[in-house]
Image 1 (cartoon, one colour):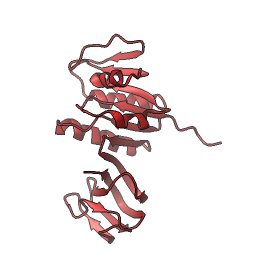
Image 2 (image 1 turned 180 degrees about the horizontal axis):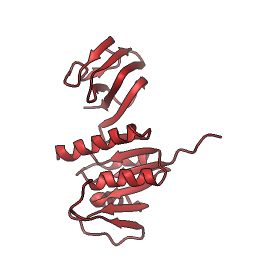
Image 3 (image 1 turned 135 degrees about the vertical axis):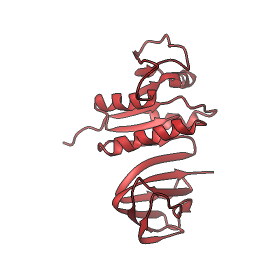
Image 4 (image 1 turned 60 degrees about the horizontal axis):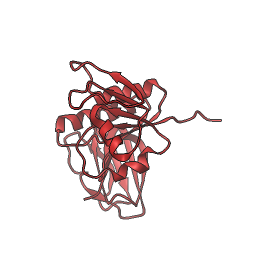
Amino acid sequence: MGTEIKKCAVISGAPEEDLSYYHKFLQDRYIICADSGYEKCAALGITPDLIIGDFDSSPRPHIECEIIDLKVRKNDTDTFHCVKEAMDRGCSSIVILGGIGDRVDHTYSNILSVVYCYDRNIECELINKKNRLFVAGGDITLSRGEYEYFSLFALFQKCTVSIKGAQYELDAYELAPDCQLTQSNAFKDDQVKISVKNGKIILILCND
């Protein structure tokens, strides 16, 4: 019997008007709220398993669940603390919801959390209503469905990328971190095959 995959959802506090997409990502997951992320759980009528935060942007909640208080002055963001705590509690599959917002610095920090997990063999995705972001290497298969477009970017260093089954295909192309050639591709076939060698990519699925 294989090792059980413990799943976690980290709910961050980026402002969002529509939370309806959350439901399909919360089932059978251990739920950790980062600071004001607990307000989203309240709006959804869900009690989280754990809340972690310094509560500088929201009052400390009075709720029947575990709470870890953080100092305001600290090295990691509230969301990154949640990701690390999930890993410490044995979670090997993490989705970060509500982590893409108006603050570009906060969004980028959450992307780095995804990179941090990938480098430690932990599945992690950053998701909002119209976007799904993850880090990948090796062979990847994307299926036509919920998302219309995909983009990929070399992460921190050059890598060799091949793309088959897409509107714009590549064959062993050396992709540099500052190259935007692979922005906004689309499906030609029902499946897109991506091969990444000598590095890793950020892969973003999106809808307008």
